[in-house]
Image (cartoon, rainbow, N blue to C red; front, side):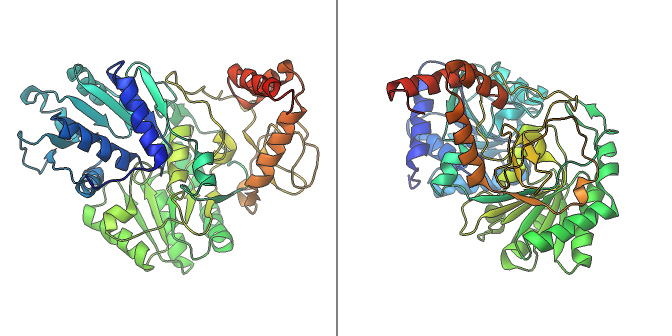
Length: 464
């Protein structure tokens, strides 16, 4: 085998092995861009060396070729169970299309190990049917989150969770890119309904796909990310085309792609972005999960900015979209949020509690404050847990407020270092276990966080 794992990846592998000795099904949780496919290829190669039959299940056509590339680099021989490929039953390892395998279960034998890519989809009816069919196999799920897009947990499918390092840890050590986040506030979504835990696309497009907002999207790119290679996430195909046309009219080479774009179109767009012929790719339901532009184009493509133009109630989708720009690069990534998603879900390296029980759903009632606040004095963007602006010191007035026209304002940068320093000071001001538990509740942490901090203080002689 030629693949070499980073130390933190090897720790994840060892954790998975330990859990698999105790049970049949384990979820590996690791941030977008941390190298889950490399980790999977290592595990698959080792299992094949021991004579095990292994499937790697993916759910998009482009992931077939990307996974194949990773296995080839790891020196692993494989076949396919996918439309358009001949099936060779003598291969120990197969890359499997979920859409294909659900139609062939009556002709196949379950493998010894199944590795599920983007496994937060596993509770869907098609994925779950394959999981139940292969109930005797060992299962390893790979994801950056431990819940479905609607926030429901994965405890019905995985008995244990092995968590990799946090996004903040990976960023501090250069495994993920530093970033600069800009956000003007939230568009007015009062008339947009929710269906199956997400905004209704048609209603959402009516709000977001306007000349005014698209013009602001282009203008903010020119001001804050000019000439950077960027991916924009749109609500609908028409919205995406409108965004691409807006950039093109402004002299910024741009192109639209969606899930129906051919493989040739995607490869050509990736190569044009790598070569500089394009600066912006506007997309719908394509780049959010696992799409590797470098793997698709055969050239190094560093996404330097993302534009969030699709409001979402899904923390999972929010983190996946932002993650497209967080692979390591010399300069900090730029996040341009025109959708209010940072206000809704927080910054990418926010400290989050993950479990197999899922994530707590936010109430639809707008009385629930966003996790990020925009200072009305200086427009600095910071965590709502802080009562004073870390930029200008203005005391935040806590009140009910619906942001309407803030999408027209210039995007304001969130200085991550100032925010983190303010959070440390806020924690230090909590002088008792009761106050720490109140802070944990305000931040959305588990009560055990407060107990852990308090025990650590006592061990240090009461120091903060």
